[in-house]
Figure 1: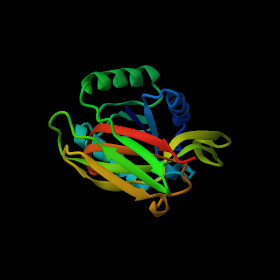
Figure 2: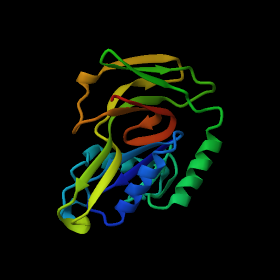
Figure 3: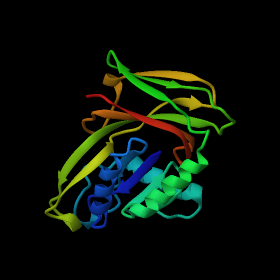
Figure 4: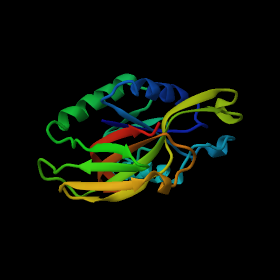
Length: 219
């Protein structure tokens, strides 16, 4: 179950959500991902982990849902429901609801690391699915950031499973598929020590349901 947290180093409400994401990472059934955004940079601190694509992704979710809700800290669960990122109970309810809706349809993809390559194995879908895309995300498991200005000035915030980039592996329409990507070919903003792989319906400008996701450590 994928839990994406849209967060910002310039947002005073975000550290509580960042801590909560770290706690959620202890649950092996949850794949937490921290997506830093830059639209609060004007408050006095430039987010050191932000990627421009994260704002586009967050807006894409809002457009697909039709509610225009874009804020921090915001959690999106399995590509669908959004809740306040610091509200543990709301996140747990959203995860429970997503699990109930994903019964017998969650894709058990596999990722392995061997000979400097990331190998991804997708089984066939058990039921009809919408066209989807397969994405590989380099991750940094833990990134402590001392914040020098802005609303969080003087604090060091630790970010969990920081997304360092997005690499499209291919398109999926329900058939069994395999992908292989050399670790040395992955372009990322900063160091990474893990990868996540998502199979997600829709397009980057309108992302949808996550059919399956998993992660693998590189170290």
